[in-house]
Image (cartoon, rainbow, N blue to C red):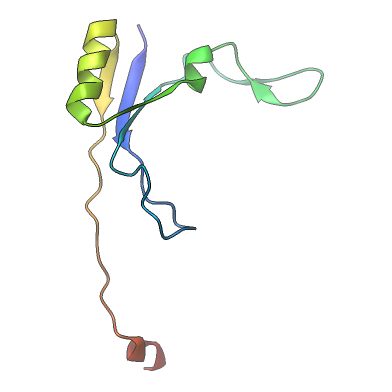
Length: 93
């Protein structure tokens, strides 16, 4: 049985847009450790669930999908957005 993490993606700090931040993302916890490939040296594992990412409109829909498919789920609540209000003149104090 795999454990799935359900969370909302944060806004990308490098861009001003908020695309796909309203969706809930489901990712599976890795079931085995990564090991280096002897030929290339890249880290990898035989766990293919690690490559799977599913998106849902609500956290309840993601939890319902996990229950229907027989997976355990952990919902990570979205952090509260903090606005730091300051004036342009504050840069010159």
